[in-house]
Length: 500
Image (cartoon, rainbow, N blue to C red; front, side):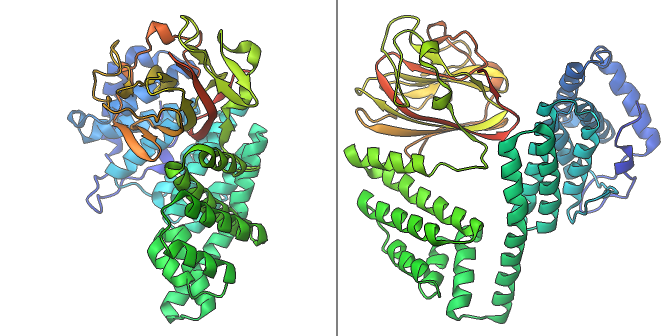
């Protein structure tokens, strides 16, 4: 099989410590060996067969015992099989590893220009996959792949690269007929030129050493929202030309520690967001308000905590979003026995067998963030979350004396994920943030890290007592009454699937 993207790879001498691309003759010999070793896998000509082999070869490429020529060929074949099966995650991962190891040339592209060779190679890989895209799901996967390139380029301040990738993402979103993605990518296409102008203005002001109030406004916002240096940003904004931001800087500089003082800062950010004309700045101000409400939530109690939770719900992203409110997908008639849905709040029944866990009609994407707000009725309330990681079902357990994941057919209190703490406060809402990545799994509760695990998904386990009909879907449960007021999922990569 001639590599689909062979045109992208030119034989060059190694530079910057990278390996030279093997000669065509060496590649040919190594490919014959690889095809012989994986003969049965290569005989499967279906899309699923190619996708599975592409992923298997990507794993194989990590083995340094294979040698530099073999690893190059394995990565090239992995990428090409992923192109044919529109497996965008494997396309990007294979190219990233190839670029990290070998001295690859920038490919010739039509209709796009990239400063970064790595982004150009990834972009070309996704473009090659477009001719194999036959469904809305394929185009959505391509859109998310282009968005990942755009986000990486923005992180590196390569705004033209980011814009090229965002424009391609918008086209794929339209092909997928995914209205939320069309909006999201459309906003990004509009915001990138504004971000580029802001970056250039900041650079000019730094070079000219301008320090008047107008310059301090630009510098302060840039330091806060781009650099992330809050201390320097607040100092700059204290002398800026915008009275609203100047007053906010005074509030933030007082280092508020109580829930009430934090809420005052949050409400002030919302107030100036309401007066802002720029969609970019409005989004930033609302995001800053959300940050302060979340900080207040950690230290608040009783009625104040409930009030903050309502404000956080009001601040959910409007319009373009990769976030979904899973509670809105629930139908009372589909809940497990004894479960109730009351005004958007999910209430568990307690201990009857068969009712410990109830399904959520949604199969999660490959990588995602899950956020829950749950209130236990008592200190010993047992709360569980049914998840999927690496295509494997697993159960996250919060018990009275520990939290952890069930692994290897065992409980959650006997493995490396176990944290011997009572993570959920009894009688008060707790905010749980779960991060699922291909190479990382974390859980935080009210801002405190409970689990930080480098996963081996094959060890996942789901005990029979909490088993649900569809283990590919998300679920929640427990052995005692609990109240779930929020369950939202944010897609990071891959595509989730609504089941109704």
